[in-house]
Each structure stands twice: as structure tokens, then as C-alpha cells.
Image 1 (cartoon, rainbow, N blue to C red):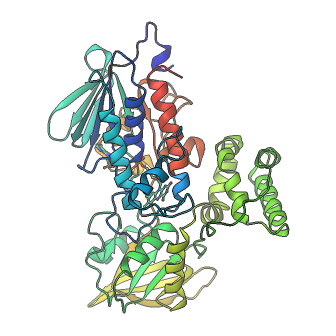
Image 2 (cartoon, rainbow, N blue to C red):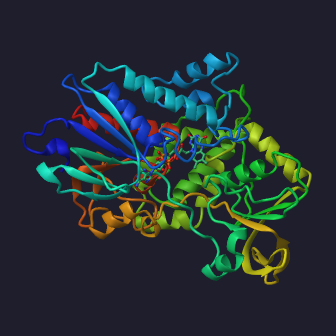
Image 3 (spheres, rainbow, N blue to C red):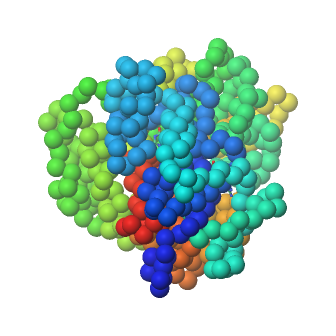
Length: 471
Ligand SMILES: Cc1cc2nc3c(=O)[nH]c(=O)nc-3n(C[C@H](O)[C@H](O)[C@H](O)COP(=O)(O)OP(=O)(O)OC[C@H]3O[C@@H](n4cnc5c(N)ncnc54)[C@H](O)[C@@H]3O)c2cc1C
């Protein structure tokens, strides 16, 4: 049951959104754009004052570019050109195929939020609260939800959207190794100032070899640098680039491909491999086959049995992530230059042991498939495994409180939380909440691909319309 199913349900007067990264900010924008004539109060609560930036778009570094071309980065599901139009105000040379900075994208989201706030007639309002929500009661006065803020105040809302985003990365090393490394281990490279203690001459181990490792390698190499970088992952797969703009698109019939892919991981992988080979034989780009599947990914994931989903996570996932989540060509070129000049090495290995020594960390690495270990000394280890989606290991008091009260249902595979088709969160007994909705990367429990703007903007619009009883 959702709010709309309640007897005599009326559209909410006040919607509180917890978190103002992309998901929370764009849900607020859509609520403001579609507010009913009788008005709506939207309350956007974020831990920091950097509204609409979130983890991805709060960076100050121009070396951090979007990994999706500008033409596919509109925040508005119903206006595909919006972001390119915004970019062209400052630089008319920007094309739909351009890869611009994440910093510019954050400025765009801020501007869009302000525009949506200013466009209404006064009946509809946006309140921005800088603060951390630490608790939530679903049985507040008048059947409303009550949100408790860290500073001691509270507020009531008819509906609450949980948009708390990514969780701190999980340690890829055993607890003893983390303790031994002490301050030389950087758990979360996105924490402001996290990399500041790394000197140009320092050798650094990056644990992880995906897009976070690319970002960290480029950030560390943005000035003169003598130290070397080693990036390790279980399989040592190298990041892939988007194709350069201007290439002709592929000719694949994606709906036919998705239908042919069937209901098991084995069949899906086999059919996908065949179609990639056929595309290559036609002189087309493999990226078009992967890209064409984008609108079908959620349905393909939902067709898999729980056992097959677990199988996917154990085996093909690493390959899928590399093929699907690619870097901008300029970032990939810069990364490749580091590899070509031996400033960065990539290998398939894991950390076997860590020992603190006078001027760094003495490591033993075990290369994949080898018995013998390799000795290596570095000054720092950076966790580049990316944000976590595991609710059970999330330190947030809000999430822990909701879990303890049985208000959330963690995905059994640790991919996020369970929601229904209308984004209502399910409780421990599997009942949809009439008050709480969720939007953000943890939707991957339901849809698998839910972390990027092209998916999240659709969810934000659908959720806003659904909250307003218009869908
Ligand atoms: C480094 C990086 C680069 C990316 N680049 C791209 C890209 O180029 N293109 C693309 O399409 N996608 C990209 N993505 C993916 C995508 O855009 C993000 O996943 C998306 O921004 C998710 O936004 P979010 O609002 O759900 O989460 P977040 O960005 O994590 O925002 C959540 C917000 O909620 C706040 N918050 C959390 N808990 C509370 C609380 N209890 N009280 C108050 N506030 C709280 C946090 O402080 C934060 O501001 C990238 C992701 C990352 C991590």
C-alpha cells in the first residue's frame, strides 16, 4: 500500500527530503515544477551547505570530468537538451558529445534548483535546512513523520524521501592491516582533504582499479610527481574509455537483443558475447552493444533468480562494470599516459600483509593465481573500491535506527534496500511504507543499474509525480 491507496488520500502538504545530492535535489526540482495549485512545502535537508552537489559533483578539481557525455546529462527526464543549453551559456563550443567537468555539473544542479524555487507563485515553497537527520519516527502527531536533527530540533512531514546517497567505502583490508597502517591508510578518498597528506615523492598503493582509482591517480598526478602508483584489483582489469565523439552509432536492435538474452546469467553472457562479436565483425563499436542495453538492464536483472543474481555478482560483474562504466576519453588518455610512462602500474593482486615501518608501510602482495608474495614499500594506501551499498554496515545513525526499528529491509545481496515499484520502502515484514520513499544508488537492489544520471533523473521524475498523486 502507498500513500495514494489510503482512503481519502490527499496530496501531501509537506514533503521532507533527506539528502541533497543529485537524487534529493532533482526530486525537489520535480516536485516544485509539478506542485499542485493549492501549493506544496518542500523541505530539503543536507548535512553540508553544498546543496545539489553530493558526493560526485562537489569536487573542486577540473581534472574530474563527467564520465557521461554532456548530451546525456540533462537532470530533467523531460528535457534532454537542458544541460547542453546550460553549458553553452559559458562555452558555445560545447557539443552533446563533450565531456565537461563534474564541478560545472554541480553548478548546473544548483542553478536548476534555484530556478525551480523562483518559478513558483508563493504557494509552493522550498526550505533548505543544513543539518544531519539522525532519527525518524513514522508515527508522529497526526500520522505524520517526525524527523530529528542532530542540532536538537525536529520537523514534521506528510511524506519523507530518503535520498541519503552513498555510504562510506568498506575496508578492502582485514581490520588488523587497517590498524597497522594507521593514518597512512585513506579509507575514503572523497572526504574533503583526504589526499592532502600525500607528498609528490610518496609511493602509493591504490586498492581498486575502476573509476575511483582513475580519479585518485589523476588527482595525485595533477602536479609534478616523483612517487609511483600501483593500482591493484582482483582481476587487474584496466578501465575503458568512451569512444571519441563523431563515430557512427551501431545498428543493433536492442529490444530483440534483450528478448534473446533470456533468464539466466549464463545465457545473458553468451548472447551478449555473440552480439559483441557480430558488431565487431560489422566494423561497429562494442560500446554500442553495451550502451543499447541501458534501457533494458533493469528488466534483465529482474528476470534473474536470486541464485543467478548472486552468480552474476561473483563472476561477470567485474567485467560488466569495466565495460559499462567507462571514463571520458580525456581522462582515459591522461590515465594511459601514466601507465605508459611507468608512473602507474596496474596488476591483479591482493594485499596479504601490512607492516608499519619507519618511513612507510611494508606490504606483501599476492598476485592473482600465484603462491609467492611480492614485497613492496609504499607511504600510503588509498581505498579506491568505491562507495558501499551495504545497509548493514552503514554507520549513519538514521539508517541504523530505521533498521533496528524494522522500517527498512536490506537487500539480501548487500546491494541496497528493498523498495516497491512506487519507491515506497518495504519494512522488515515486506510491507510498503505509506510515509517513506527512497531514491538513489541503492535502487540497484531492484534495478541493478541505478547509479548514473540517465537512470536517476527518470526515477526522480516518477517519484515526484507519484508523491503528488499524478502517476
Ligand atoms: C565520484 C563519482 C563520480 C560520478 N560521476 C558520474 C558521471 O559523470 N555521470 C553520471 O551519470 N553519474 C556519475 N556518478 C553517479 C551519480 O551521479 C551519483 O551516484 C549520484 O550523484 C547519486 O546522488 P545521490 O544524491 O543519490 O547521493 P549523494 O551524492 O551521495 O548525495 C547524498 C547527500 O545526502 C546527504 N546525507 C546523507 N545522509 C544524510 C542525513 N542523515 N542527513 C542529512 N543529509 C544526509 C549527504 O551529505 C549527501 O550530500 C558518479 C558518482 C561518483 C561517486
